[in-house]
Image (tube, rainbow, N blue to C red):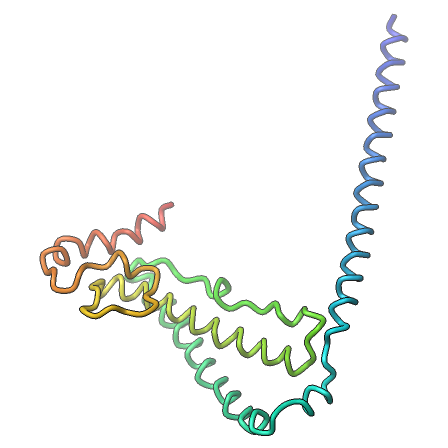
Length: 193
């Protein structure tokens, strides 16, 4: 009887090994197909790529001549990025405000697109950085405003930041005085979560 059980257990182990081998083969086949599809997708996208020479020929002269003006923006963007990063590193721990993750706002992924030429990729890199620094700066400023001056404006603000709806109404001194510390403590609650 023992030998029959041992025989069945050996067959079960062999079947499990065989099943695992089939799963492994299926995963490997799927990975190959996925890679083939990705290569085909990239080939299809490369068909839409405009060559560098053609891109420059098709560009208007005034657009090319204004490029140095646009690219001069690197300096203020870099300085703003540096200032905001240092500012929140120094001040936010003192105010107990959670730090803003820079990587959530400054994203560089467009360079992977096969249909962009080198100038288009550089432009996408520049725009990603500029808009990312602006969004990062806005979030740091919004958290600072919530801490120091969470009062809505008398006039409507176009495209107010996400923290703005929690602010106190303009002219409501009582709500401001009673709620300021509660609003500041919200950061403590968020940090605990």
